[in-house]
Image: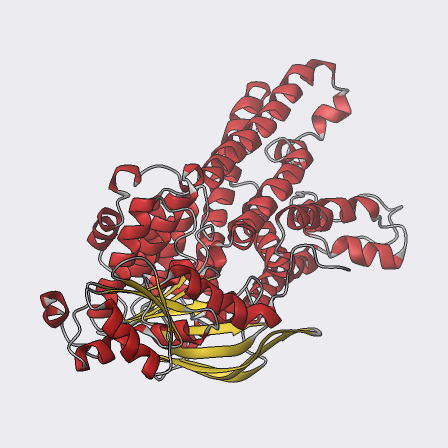
Length: 286
Length: 303
């Protein structure tokens, strides 16, 4: 039995570890996001879908232009031109797509068990989730900027055929474009927070859809309580901000929204998603 | 070195782990045995901070695992082979883990080659068999070259060649001075793998001792001895208090003494041994007897 004597004696192993860098976590979360086919296709198809929806609205306006009443043509620019560059339907699609993508980026880890592997590799959960939040927010903001910018220029190019296009020098246009561009990160962070809270795939997607899409549809501005809740939804916030007329045009609405307050709504939903993610993500057993 | 001290985990009224205290030493393979639902996985999760203990503590190399900002260089763990996102390739999965822990990416190729997954490295994990996922989990555990390694039921789904490879790997890791802690619900898996056993049932510690002395605990435990001096050795063993039953020419079946003691007696009296084996059935029997009172999910149990 010479084999027994040839074994090296047990020796305590020392761990030679480089300093923990937040940059490594950002890089890891970035690769985690883009290495998933579902996320890549979700972003690409979502982008194409949004641009198509908006371009289609501009094409419809151009086709119907000759049937418009003179008053309709007169007041089409700039509000109608803007509406055709990011339609209400595009907003609904954005809520659904980006809310779901934000939710999936975390809930897929919980539902597959990957989260255990992740937290075993990075016990600093707060740092890891912060990296996830930063990467998701950045990707979704870029998504929003590209989708909004592309939609705007494509739609205005189409509308210019009837001299109904507007340019980015139009007064108030930046608020509207920014509202559309920032909707994706707001929705994605909402989905992320719900994922950290619910942790089950199907329930998280239903929850995200309910909160972002369904609840605003149940609310109106006829009663004070209802108007308050409605104005506090990202959906209504986008509608109010993405409007060049600005002042309340309909005097029959008893409780109109204030655009300045709607920026606070955007911020509150984004921060809410972040706080919930960090709070529940760091505390619970996985 | 893993030190578990009065570790307790409750889920509502259910006590999953109940005041466990034991130490896992470096340089050997320690088996973590218990029936289904005995609290093995919960204990392993508490070791690496995935679950927070209700009371008690656990340290790895003297530190609470969750106090490390990055984990892979401290503890390598395969808890559940399916704890991976099926949408990524093995390279992408390990690449993300390596990046977060500042481990050079060439290490990914190294560990994939070591576990025999180099050929499937770029395929999506979702298409892997259970055995391949086990290999991937082992690769992830090895990634940071850690001094402490945890494996929860690592042999599930492996083919015979894979089982032999894993046993050799555990031996090698232990021989390098690492702490290797391997859970299983099957005694037979442990007998060729572990040097030391920690046995639990219903969340409580049942045994914490070397494999050989554990084997001798079971009432029906027996050791097969093959020797040309069968008659003479039988006399020696009987005098030492063992029950000896001849089993053909040159072969004795001994109960009441473990293999170590028999070998020692034979050596002292100058008897030549040709085979000395603790029978597999007896290890399994010892395990079954010890855990009989603590089996949680018994087939055919009346309700």
